[in-house]
Length: 66
Image 1 (tube, rainbow, N blue to C red):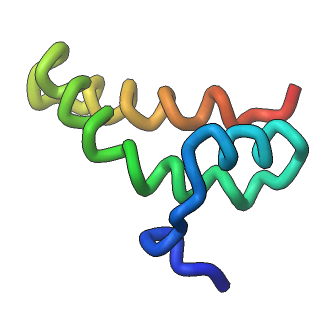
Image 2 (spheres, one colour; image 1 turned 60 degrees about the horizontal axis):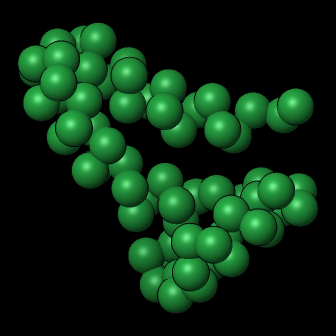
Image 3 (cartoon, rainbow, N blue to C red; image 1 turned 180 degrees about the horizontal axis):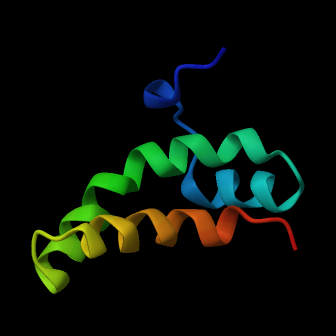
């Protein structure tokens, strides 16, 4: 199993792989950006369950199958 923290591929490369069907390459993007997205959601919505839900939804929606 690949250590996602050590993944040095660019965001563009990872996105291209996800779009090509390699869904496991989505994990490094999630690990890279979830904290920042969650922080932004808390800043906009306050420290609420809705802020956490918004952050989760931001990552779930692009990962759904078409």
